[in-house]
Length: 266
Ligand SMILES: Nc1ncnc2c1ncn2[C@@H]1O[C@H](COP(=O)(O)OP(=O)(O)O)[C@@H](O)[C@H]1O
Ligand SMILES: [Mg+2]
Image 1 (cartoon, rainbow, N blue to C red):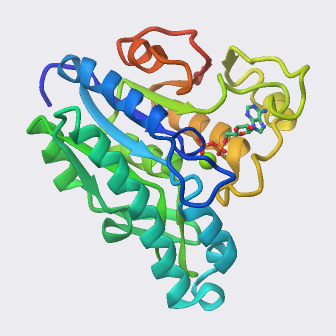
Image 2 (image 1 turned 180 degrees about the vertical axis):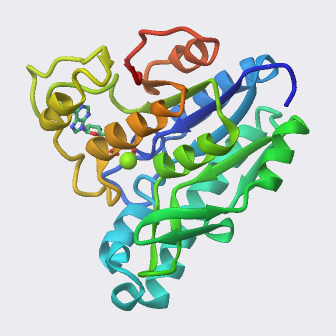
């Protein structure tokens, strides 16, 4: 890799789509994110991951894709994949409109799952794209599972797997809230932002964090905290920030800490 830090950025499905409205993208948020990414693209090596929000989540829930291929059928697999790819195309288009060399990486084409966990990903092309100064854009998707027939690879799981291979310096998770709170901030007005999660308060935080709205088939905030703590163990700085506040993503990519919740392993 070029002599620049490698940074992974997740554009959360909750931020780039309207989660309660099937297949509707929030273009204002998406285009603002693309603009900020373009402004810092030359400063670092970047990989973008994004969630599916209201595109694949309702489809995956309807077919019960998480229960495996026997339950959801080939039709459920195909429909979920199509919905995930639809939002991916919109993300790639938005990035390319900022003259970024965004290249989609189809998760279902390079990922093998086993019992709901990523077993293998063919990542050589993706690594080469980064070396050649392009911008791979990977996304949460349904994939073949050797035990269940199929299961869902969340963006958090993908970024964790990629971190084992690529060792990013920072992993920035941008979503529709400012970080991890003591309770769901959309339901509890007294919820307080947790500035830092580490070994010391992990169990306590997991106890406080309720699941995200039922449309998130991959488990919402609990899944985020768990998988991101595992990711932090690999040595990356992990930051959860809001994508709804213009400017935060750019500042975070440039290295600023304390903009939301920091997760560190120590
Ligand atoms: N303790 C909590 N702190 C922050 N957000 C929470 C918490 N509990 C539930 N949530 C919900 O989690 C959502 C973010 O998770 P999710 O919907 O999976 O986002 P994304 O699509 O970006 O992965 C927020 O919209 C928020 O309402
Ligand atoms: Mg999610």
